[in-house]
Image (cartoon, rainbow, N blue to C red):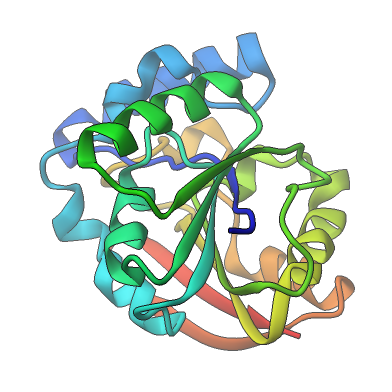
Length: 223
């Protein structure tokens, strides 16, 4: 088996949106832009499945049985386990994060779910620690705002080196100036899609597809 990558997933139920904003404020004070591990429960809102649209996102990236994929910024592993079920026993999910506490939480969750196709990887903002040229897709859900501005082009370039020739990167972010779950617009951590597209171009990537989600947008990037 190869490797997988991560950073973090930011998402909560609409009823808990104010808690998410508060947690993000604490994260900025304690861990730079990183989501605090003690608040992982906020990422598990009961209505997340309805508004996050995981199947739509995975379909847009062409993730299927046997795919080799990476989940960047795994958080508590909400998306990791869905990716693992989608790729099946013939596929691999590299669950990556820059915080060891997140990877510990994912390993516990994967064990409870009895999934044997997940590998955890500790990375950095500039080096996700993924196998070169091996991945069909890399998923980055609500992690992009946590990467420092100066590191974002390098971050995308590092992800691109992990892709197969036809591999895709999926960037999911909350829309600026919108309500719903996730960080409050006033927190200043929402990133406009135009800025991601600018970074992607600088990294030598192109936008393959765009999708509009209830509270977020999805950009699919390729070489």
